[in-house]
Image (cartoon, rainbow, N blue to C red):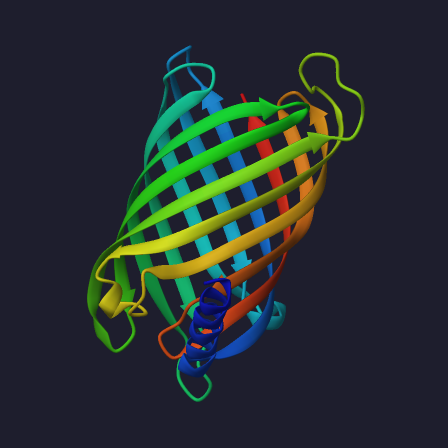
Amino acid sequence: MRKYLLMCLAFFAMSFAIKAQTVDQNSGWLFLMNSTKFNDKWGMHFDVQLRSQDNWDGVKNLLVRPGITYYINKSSDVTLGYLYSPTFVKSAGHPNNTLVENRIWEQYIYKHKLSFINVSHRFRLEQRFMERQGADDLFSQRARYFLRLMAPLNKVNGSFEKGVFVALQNEVFLNVQNKEELNGSLFDQNRVYGAAGYRISPKVDLEAGYMNQSINGKTNNTRNHIVQVALYTRF
């Protein structure tokens, strides 16, 4: 039975390799995220990202993502939000073009601790309204699951208020509607990320790290090697 399962896994791996070649890219992401509490129950989410073209050749994506958050308790919250994201397309021999994606998104976050490690789970559903080059606009839905582990390196008594930390996270993306128009697969992409940072105060974190983004394409897969710098603020 074990040998049979190994043969099946090898077959699927070979099928995936035959389906599409993998293209390697290198880029940089700049990420700013803010969470602001109005009171014990309501708050605001806001994040902005800049992502570069391959080999840092200019800006490829801008993402602006506001949202309204309801705090269920100290460990859980839900957010309803909107995203505006232009993609600046560069094609050799063709004029540059800008394609815009608008999203409505809903998410649930649950936080807890494992010993001294802070753990965060995020479940997000996105309704995507996408412009496409040479094709009609497309609506699709995508589900995302995000897991982040953050550990302070200095000894902490009570809450972590200042000092060096390390973080490890992973996020998987699944196409749940109109996947035939995207890449023909349930699996969209995966992002694994490791970082080191410094908590400047209980309200501000600065970190930098490496992300490996694996994108399942329709004809070619992409493996994006990303250097990310992130600033997190909480008010």
